[in-house]
Amino acid sequence: MSEIYLVRHGQASFGAKNYDKLSELGHQQARWLGEYFRSRDISFSQVFMGDMVRHRETTQGILDGLSQFPVVTVDIGFNEFDFKNIGDSYRALNPQSRLPEKPKPADFYRLLKLAMHAWSEDLLPLNTLDESWLDFKNRVQRALQIVCQQGSDKPILIVSSGGAISMLMSLVLGLDANQVIELNMQVRNTSISHFFFNKSNIRLSSFNNIPHLDSPDRLDSITFS
Image (cartoon, rainbow, N blue to C red; front, side, top):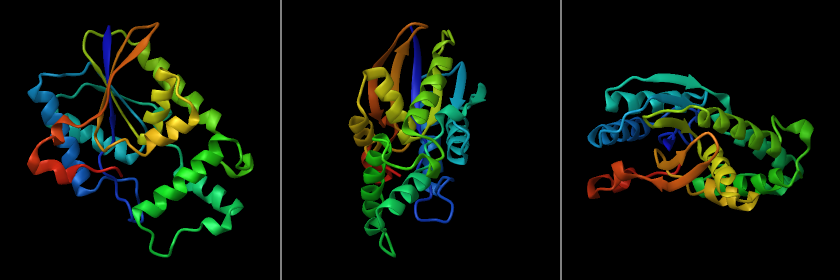
């Protein structure tokens, strides 16, 4: 069977005007991951990534650390859902759920979780959304199917985001929406989820691993945003 290494992007710029770019630490996390792959003699026949700045920057950092440059395919199916759009739609229905003037990460994640539950239960007006929960699920499924049609002797790398990774996990493991939402809160930056696949089946081997950060001097570099 072939292998997939599914990686979440490095730490993005939480709290900045533009979240969709890596922080300095996020760039370092990506390079460390590439160096880890190189140290383990892991190379990739193909790379798939979402069409977001943080995906591109993470992919570049991994490949720089790996010192290999395989073909990279952009697929918007691996993009993150628009959490601002979901949050705005939820707050329009629930004005009492506004964020504090100076929100902490915990405030943001609390609101996001509530909004995702409403989104997954079709409680948000469709005319306020960029995509429905079902649309999100379908595009991730389509992107995964395209990857699984690629037969390869070498592993395939996918760089994506926490929500899309959690939805992909639900497709592989048959998880419900509540479990997708819980997983979304747990996926660490530049974590690896490993799968074996062929054209008819895909199996999870491991989830959310960070071997490149598993040393005392890098414990402070483990992040979730």
